[in-house]
Image (tube, rainbow, N blue to C red; front, top):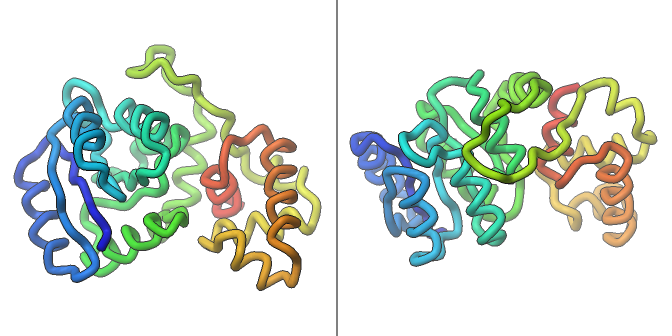
Length: 221
């Protein structure tokens, strides 16, 4: 059973998400929060597996909350929900460690699948959202931030892609498809440790922080 916390400042949206997800046999809604501060408190108290996070909220927004949750509770996966597929806040949340994002009007079946995927450790980007997210990530961060976290380096499309070796591009593509290290190793007939070494080199070569940003890069070229 996947334990899910819903965070949104609009009660109607929280209730709507809870109603549709309660019908999924693999998901248990364990709580709700109406802003970032409450979300952090609820995560500490309830220890959810996945947080559905709205990014635009009064007080502490979803970006700052995502940064804090990913830093303090690394086992908790944050899946960002937004009503604007060009929302710059989403790019910031992904940069701070969110496991993926979807539009709020995503069909229930796809939302349930996305929750299951990020719970397993995959990165999930809604259909057609990879390039838009990469474009947002290429923009500079605002001078004033709602959190003191330092923005990580971000993928820079084709220019970064060409810095990788053919094997590294192959592995990055598989990461972008949602495969974990075991699955990549089996598909390429190499050891898991070799996969890890390649990923380490990719991160170092491009000054990226984690495989989420590798996935974003792979989906942007």
